[in-house]
Length: 168
Image 1 (spheres, rainbow, N blue to C red):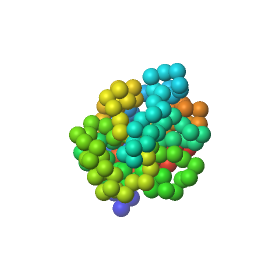
Image 2 (cartoon, one colour; image 1 turned 45 degrees about the vertical axis):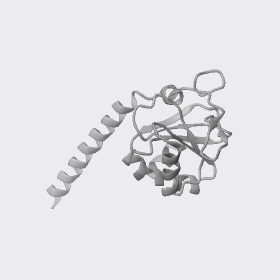
Image 3 (cartoon, one colour; image 1 turned 90 degrees about the vertical axis):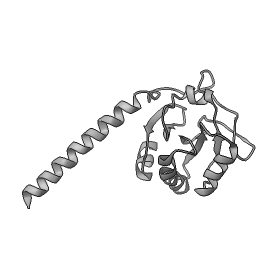
């Protein structure tokens, strides 16, 4: 019994190390966590159109902000977007903005939003935004603080707890 538990623990530890290593290498193509998003560089996007015909800023508005990049056809995005909605609903001290990229039509983005009953702003991204934020896969997200500096990032599925911990 003890040998079996020890074996399971070691297998779990090896899996965890491999998973973390792969995640680290995948995230090296993303912007570094010390990058500042400000009015003076290419990451300043103040008037990004939304699904509701308004505009949204991809800069912090006085709160830590999660900027979540997704594509409506991405299956992992379909699985993980509910975690982002839960985070948004439970944490009023945190802003959430989803940015749709690589979509074929606004109707496709609207259908994705309605399917998942999203209540945070959905921005309609562009190739310029995709390149500026070094988005190479979906879902990808950055957490920016009140001073508009990146404090967290991830690529791929993230749980609601994982999103919350990165946003602190």
